[in-house]
Amino acid sequence: MKTLQSGPDTIYDVLGIGFGPSNLALAIAVEEHNAALPAGERIRAGFLEKQPRFGWHRGMLIDDATMQVSFLKDLVTMRDPTSDYSFLSYLREQGRLVDFLNQKTLFPLRVEFHDYFEWAAARVDDLVEYSAEVVAVEPVTSEDGEVRWFDVVSRDRSAVGGTVVRRARNVSVAVGLEPHLPPGTVLSDRVWHNSELIPRVAELSGAGVPVRRAIVLGAGQSAAEAVDYLHRTFPDAEVCAVFAKYGYTPADDSPFANRIFDPEAVDVYFNSPPGVKQSLVDYHRGTNYSVVDMDLIESLYAAMYREKVQGRERLRMLNVSRIRDVRPVESRLDVTVEFLPTGEREVLSSDVLVHATGYRPHDIGTVLGEAAKLCLRDEEDAVRVARDHRLELTPGVTAGIYLQGGTEHSHGLASTLLSTTAVRAGEIRDSLLTRRMAEAS
Image (tube, rainbow, N blue to C red; front, side, top):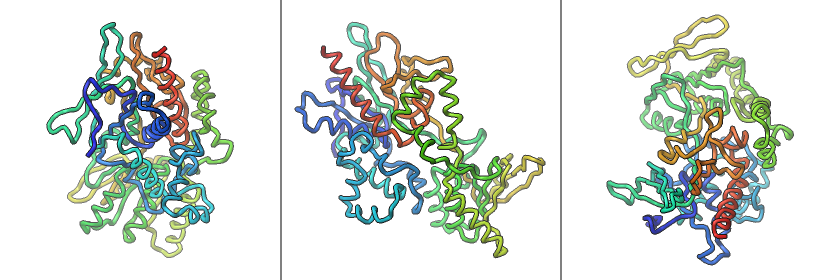
């Protein structure tokens, strides 16, 4: 098995930390740039991923769930429509191009898009070290006192009982988001975050554990999908959706609102004063936060009404409500739900509690360690990010840190989504080239 070279004599132009869609798109942008160049002019890139293989939200790959962005917002098309790493190229290779077109849809199945990602990742496999968990990023100072490199320390499967150090002029941090849970939540084999939905349900089904009632907390797309999935998977169970809203809010995917995810919108947002940035987020939260596709809303309502007609109501919407207490009782849970308008509380004996409560960016300090101390911060204590996605660092640092995701405060709503992933990868690649040329001149 090939491993990425290590040691101080091997210096990468960029090392990626994490290998989800963002750094995969960067790997492709680098690979396409390098394809026609002699070895001395190529960008030397490598990527470290703690998972044993490529995986993107595997726990929510529900068989009939579709993407919420157009297939044209894949890893390359918005940057280069002629790239053979596109979703359409994938379909052609799989022999499904005509079949897909006959569906007349812009939104593929999520499992199919994940397979596309795996297909693309396999084509740049020589750039990636899997089962390599980054544990430290250490600044390296040259003889003139400048920080010119970073030593990226990882626990690799190839390093038995130790760590591997790789040196880079730049790092690209793309570690995705981590599950967000309400304060005091204790996870168990009965209490999960929705990111574990598919494997957890498979464990219960495989062990023959009866599920008589399942509760899902949350009002967004993932919550509604979890409710629907549990309702279909456990046909004898009552499934309760708990949320503080009166009802699910439809996602605003109208053409004008969707322009907030255009590449040009990043420039508008980046150059706006703080007050305008906050207004743009507030105005357009309905495109992404705590909203649900209208088709799924209507499907759930139809199922609930159908059960009411039939006199066996398994699907319950506990709206304007919050969970106030969760107590394990033998092999079940006692979940206290409060109806907020009256304060009335009901204790529901449940087999499963799913927290579909969203995600949040990883703490940059945890990811970067010592290198995080070099990052400049704004008045809100958020890291300062340049337009080319490079963190602003203290004087005397010529090494670079690029951040993919976790930049909503600087680059807008699309920073954690797929919408501008291809374009951002091209911008980072071009920034690496521009800076390398400047250093050489």
